[in-house]
Structure formats: structure tokens, C-alpha cells
Length: 481
Image 1 (cartoon, one colour):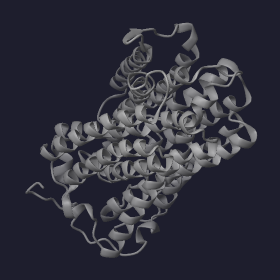
Image 2 (tube, rainbow, N blue to C red; image 1 turned 135 degrees about the vertical axis):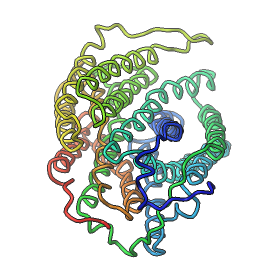
Image 3 (cartoon, rainbow, N blue to C red; image 1 turned 90 degrees about the vertical axis):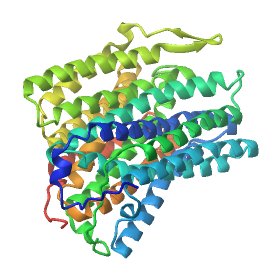
């Protein structure tokens, strides 16, 4: 642990120093948990063939993963509220992140014995352990990213970190598809192809754990006593923000979970499993594009002209990255480059342009951005439900562009003004990620009874609540300290 500890009330040092190096380290952690989280979307479809599962049974993948967020965060909250101290303060943020990465590694490696047992339950258990590590990592890293600099740029920093998180979710489907379906498979999917893939991931997580522990990162501790009980929930904007996080994560994960199923429909895309999985990178890449643009749009330290230039460069750069990454295929024992024809992705380019315009009317205003982006997403989901062919195809994929700012904007709005309750409030917001376990599960039952297309009414309802939170629910009515 670092020798120097700082009281949260002494903020000027954290706000004026340059913490570029530590922030870069933190963004790598965001990348890692984005990469491993999106693998759930691959597992849902892979386990279907291996274990012959129904839609509700496949939804248990997300239930096990995101259920861990609820359970671990609840334990964290109970400990902090009963002891009057933030548990992270006992070990420090840096050590907390290193330990979290180690738990992630153990969870990934546990896929190997699960494969030996050929047990779906054992795989779900390994996922729970993995997700427990990701939960602890988020409890540490999200508030840490917001305090590494000036408070007025907190949303900008968190969006930038989330952009790297989305780089992980963009690359993840490609890497996972290649490893599971081709590198570790001889043509037939088996539990061994999944186990070997996660064994590689586990070793990477353990390596990152060691690097994080050895890195030089400023200590940050909150020495204030936390009020026992549920005093933090007296902050109405936090309480409503917890619900907003649940709906946001649940809606995003619901779309990501069932998008492959949707694209395989004859009247939508008529794609095979592997080809449909590649389009996950366009969905998750959209989140990366939006989040990186948001990091500029919400940066109060640069002029409007500078913002427009940077946003344009970012939009073109990220799209090019997505286009190149999705063009990489593994065939005949080697990699080939087979990109999509531009005429095929024209509608996606139109949605990128709309995304850019949406940012230009929401500069420096996280709440307004939440309303505008959630409204556009509601329209896209409605089009996915009521149309077919390319319009429905790209409408559902395009929601990623407008989900992009949800997490960071809700998170920064919800913890605003919490003071000594910040870490405790953060743990409750992380707990609300349980929405990622609930909404995809609810959607799975709609799929079973009414088909996958109509099931997207579930995330559509989530967008309605986000519009409310951005318009009114985020307003601070009571200070937390």
C-alpha cells in the first residue's frame, strides 16, 4: 500500500495535480472488464449448442454474472453502513483494484474444471466468481476515475474511461468468436473450446493484477466516518439514480444478449451464428464511439470549436477501427481481411451522423444528453420492433451509439454532492447493475412466448425511465454530507 494517505476533504491536491499516468492505468482496467463482460453475449449462444438450452436457461448466464454485482455490492454496503467506515479505506484503492483483478483471474481459470465436469452449473459458478471480481473492480475504479482531477471534468473523465471499456466490448466479440469457434475448436463446439479461451483470459487478468499492484498510483482515502444505516438514501437523486442504473444496464445488456438471436431471424438478417456474432462489435463499438466523443463534449476546459474538431476526428477514427476489426476473419488456419461493403453499412453511418448532432446540442450538460440520447434510443427500439430488413437490423445495432453516455452520465449525476457518502453511494450504484441480470431474464420469457422481435419492448421501457431521470430525477434535493 502507498505510504501517503489523503483525507477526502483535502481535495485541492487531487484537483490541481496531473494524474495522467494513474488515469491511463485505470482506463486499462476499464478495458479489461469491458472485454470480459461482453463475452457473456458469446457464451449465451455458445452454451445453447453445447447444453441444448432454452432462452430462460441461457439467460442464467447474465443472471449469474450480474447477480454477483448485487450480492457483492450489498455485502459491501452492509459492511460500510454497519461499521461506519468504507472497506476500501482499509486497503486503499490501488490494492483494491489489484485484488479485484486477481479474483477475476481465478474466476476465468475456474472455467477449466467446469469443462472437466461438463457442467453448466459449474460454468455459472465460475462466472459468479469472475463477476465478483469485476464488481469489486468497479467499486474501486469508478469513483477513483472521477477524483483524478477537477470535479467539473468528472463526467468527461468517466466517459473517456468508459470509452476504453467499450474498446474492450468492441474487440471482445471478435477475439472470443475466433478463439472459441476456430482456434480452440476443430469444427465442433465443445466445453473445452470455452475453457481454453477463459484460461488465457485468466492468465491475462493475473498479469494485470501484478502490474497494478506494482504501479505508482496516488493514494486516496476517505477518513470521515460513514453514518450507519441508510442515511445515504436520503439523497433523492441517488435513490432515483440507483433505479436509473438498473434500467440502463438492464436495457443495454438485454439488447447485447439477444441481438445475435435477432439478427439470425430470416426477416431481419438471416445470418449464421458466427457472422451474427461479428455484428456485436458494431453494437459495442457504437458505445465506444459515443463515449469517446462524450469525453470531449463534456469537457468544460476546451472551446466549442476545439470540441467539434476533436469529436469529428474521434468519430471517423473509431468508425475506421470498428470497420477494420470486423473485417478480420480467421479462415483456413490464417487471418484474412474481408470488410463489409460500404453500401451495406450506410444506415449505420447515418446513425453516427445523428449521434454527432446529438452531442452538439448537449455540450457540457450530462442531464440533457441523457434525455436526448434515451429518446433517440426509444425510437430506434420501436423501429426494431415494428419493421424488418435493414431498418430493423441497423436500428437495433445503432442503439449502442446512444446507450454510450448512459452509465457515466447517470453515475456522475447520482454521486454529485455526496461527500463522505461517495464510496457508499458508489457501491449502491454498482449494486444496481443487477438490472443486467433481471431485464434480460424478463426478456427471455417474452422471447419464449412472443418471439425475439417483440421482446425489445423491455429495454424500450427502460429508456422511458432514463428520460425521466435526465429531465427531473437527477436534481439534487438534499446534501449527503
